[in-house]
Amino acid sequence: MSRPLRVVVVNGSPNERSRTMGLAGLVTSRLEELLPVEVHRIDVYRLGHGFTDAVLREEVSPEVEQRIRLAEGADVLVAATPVFRASYAGMFKHFFDLVDQYALANKPVILVATGGSDRHALVIEHALRPLFAFFQAATAPVGFYANAGDFDGTLVLNGEVYSRVEMGLNDIVAQLKALSDGLGDGAGATAA
Image (cartoon, rainbow, N blue to C red):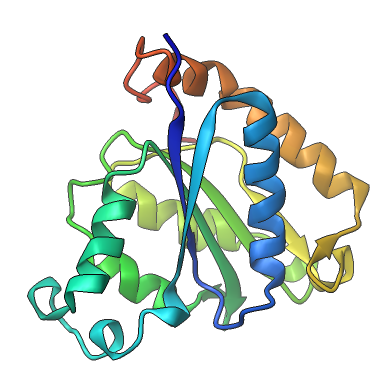
């Protein structure tokens, strides 16, 4: 019997109106069309001093601890970040610095990034994928990237981005469906 997958988006953007969340929203909307899901969102910029002042997990506020546990307990994690200085945002990385080393093992992770131009598109392969390989997560083979010209505000306008999201999610929907049906553990969403 299917159960809703708990999809947690970790948004590394420092802005409320965010192209990164626009792209992550496109991904989660398409997931909602394909599978029963409940989507939760963690905006790292909203976590405050209980997050930014903490060097160690033991130092975070109870509210931040709750958000970290939400990410660790997700059925599917959507890791979304804008590109800063050729890599992920600092607060995005700080959030994952606080996540337990083994909490994401075999967890399906969908990689999402935005940048000013296509020159930053390889951030998925050179920064995000190695980060989640450290966690032994089951990253989806196709990551999603869009540049500033692909948006009108936070709305994705480029049809190629929609096509890539469709293709990338089709690659993993069977594994996610099995997870939803209780027939799998998500480990089938292969790492690239």
